[in-house]
Length: 292
Image 1 (cartoon, one colour):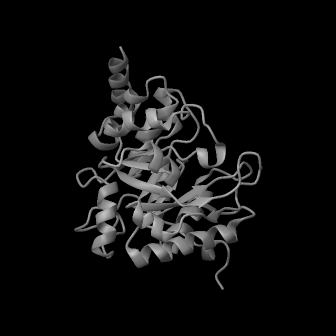
Image 2: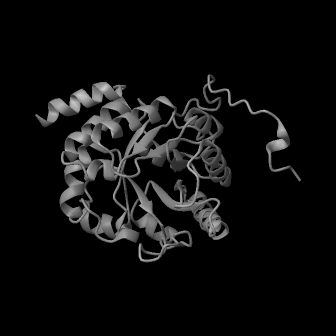
Image 3: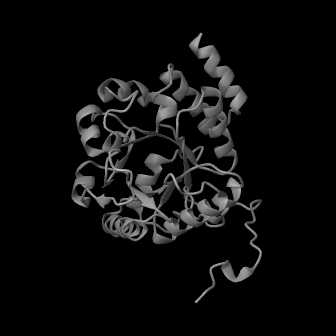
């Protein structure tokens, strides 16, 4: 059995070398997948930039009516022109998102306790594969707790969804969950993202951290960076820029878009960074011009 320190050999992530198995298909690690999987991934990740702008509005599944998302039917449609992939629950998607839209869908399929319970790590798979198919989901999102009390059941949930996804060619998005007592370091994120990727997910969503380029290099599937808590707009744009520069293939900005006083302009500025190569300063100038 291997020791816990990776055989005690210094690690070399070769961050200066691009991922080796990335041609001809543009999504990292997806070269050997079947046509159906690739079609879903191509819906999520732009073929030109290779990146995606996700918009998470699934907070209500454990937080209830979230500030900024009180009226999903009003908030989501107006932001859709600047979004590539909508991440939500089946209830929110079916009731509040116009079905004629052409955006990719990341369907939240795991569920668990509410904010009334401090322990959110014991989730279950709440949506079966048949409903994901009926909703034409482009990927299924599963909250995954590494290092928490519910780790084993969380990984069991993840593997069940991955197995079902492979049967019907629907990708799985593994969402790295970070509890209040868990560290947010590159050591933790290297561990969590790699474990989830080796289980078989096609996309990993995680947080930005120091040495992020090493986290990306060690993960053989695309990483999408979560926006996390609401930041001032200039700081959120810097976070998005650093994530893309560090090798992320997208950002999932929820609160940093829908809790902004200028949500539409913020989503436009994020898009400039993700797809058009804007720096954070250029995106901030664009945002300032747009709101005045």
